[in-house]
Length: 147
Figure 1: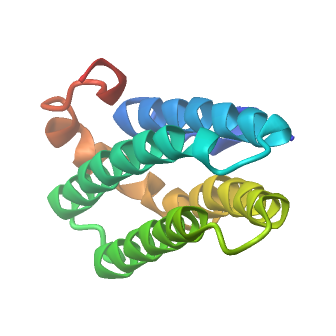
Figure 2 (figure 1 turned 135 degrees about the vertical axis):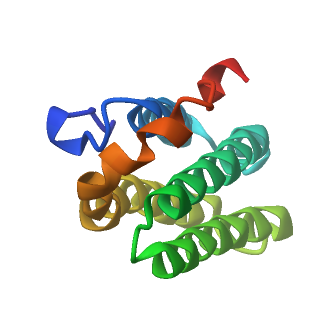
């Protein structure tokens, strides 16, 4: 199942949304690859790229939250850490190769879909009222896909 960007996912019509668009692209590439993967070896570089991008995106989002006085900043940071920990657990399970690849890949697909949809809709949406206060700080950011 590929995840399609919808306008209702928009937070700021700027840097955060651009990052989220790129996350959608990366996750969709991984979802496509998991459909045909028969081993974990094929997934390693994609997950490393996703993790690297997520770390940069989370940092940017958290810096914008600080700049705007976003009151849920600490909780949001914890959520970001939890997502990275869960992703790391999948990478570790794949490296250990002690679990059936099909099972782990199904769990990975479910996690990635939940990550994008749930995190954006349930947590990032609460940043919308602070977008105006984030505008000046966001101007200093270049698109991550270009970085």
